[in-house]
Image 1 (cartoon, rainbow, N blue to C red):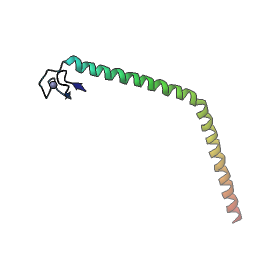
Image 2: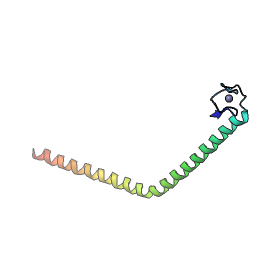
Image 3: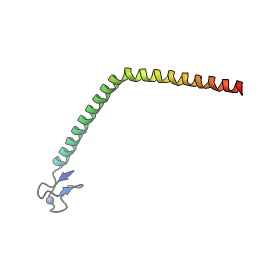
Image 4: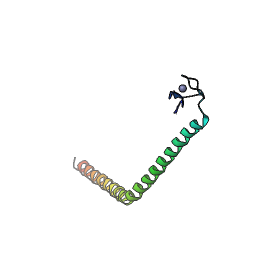
Length: 91
Ligand SMILES: [Zn+2]
């Protein structure tokens, strides 16, 4: 977003202010993009770093949960099957 240096009107496109006709210097447009790129880059960098740290910290715990979860599901399935078989044999 760029603002007219003369009257402060927001200039969304073009190189001239729609209100007063002042030429918007390209440098200010570039500066806005640079500022946004810098901010986005920093935010992304921070986000990636945070994600990496969380992943590193959570990995062993998640591995345990997944292992236990799989075994739990398996044994639960087997128990259910055994119970179902017993019921079938009985009835
Ligand atoms: Zn203006």
